[in-house]
Length: 454
Ligand code: AMP
Image (cartoon, rainbow, N blue to C red; front, side, top):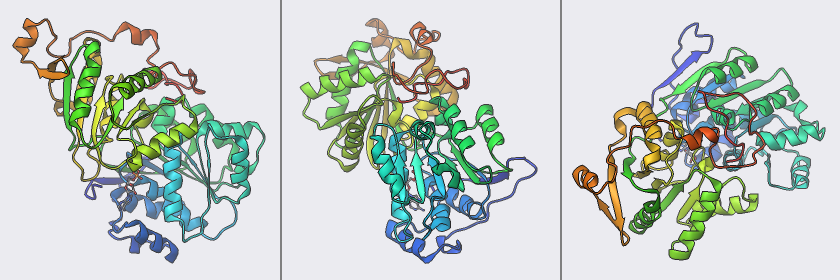
């Protein structure tokens, strides 16, 4: 956790800039004693910059736009003021929307940990779980509901009325919600909530459309920014120019060289399944897979097992690229180069978290030049040159540019345009899914929303 990251608090009206009150200890916040007990149990001593800037205005009931990525401590920044407000109350008071089930589970965990002594009860409503489980959770008097937009809309469509009690709405990873086509569903949820409420929205990136959505749903929000959208600064990045056929042997070689957790990203759900099947046959490393077409039970088992070390390797679509907080991922491997530059940043941000070291390797084929250039534009010099490699009998041979040229191998990412196959696929990420939000919602940066469930 970078405690020195720059923080700025600006009223969104841009009328002026106010500097965040320099809160250096949790004790400076007027929390109930029960919260201090749980903070101590969690080992949280010093507020992170987003917490130092957010908690004060949130306790005052102000609307907030937080520009912060996962890893900054943003969950506690909104959870702690909510726990303070709802401690020892019977009724529902807060709704937190998250784009993925995994992030929803993580947020629930944070509420349970930090709200344990305050008696705050949380219900999680996500897809892939029988609806009667939701009914059971709702009957147990939750103070906070953490939900994905799709499942909450199902409840609205069934005529469930609990949303009229919500005093605080949190929209986490708003940019991701937008990418996944969830914004129409978020709007429907907002319409079902009382107009008089506090709204806190968190996003890693801010563009015009997100800003418009915010302006429509918030009252003069405080804008709190922590650092910039930056890749994990300490991750050692490497790019390998490789043929499509050599990707798996190269991956096998990298996996054999690793000792800790490895996260492997592919573009499509089918690709994830196929690679997992192939590798499981040939390697004896405990590994698992994660994508949006898997049953919830299997997704939970995959994430839980990767987190607790039962699985050393997780092969996933971009569903695991954001929001997921797993400590000590030694190596992130982009088996398929991401088609959106921001996804590169989010994927490699899974390693070298907090004080850990980490490596991020990306496989670059002839078709990926367009996308590599996109990442170079976004993060500039931090992306190293592409190194041509050959894989022979399981051994990786790094070629000099001259050797590569002599062998007919490409040297740096070729300078061609966006591959046709992607234009035809409408820029989908995560592969041909049947996501709910597909095709709905507007375009952002000229890109269509991807499948709702990567
Ligand atoms: P988040 O960005 O909310 O996903 O948090 C990232 C990680 O930082 C989580 O593992 C939190 O438990 C941890 N964390 C959050 N706030 C603090 C704090 N004040 N001190 C130490 N760790 C924290």
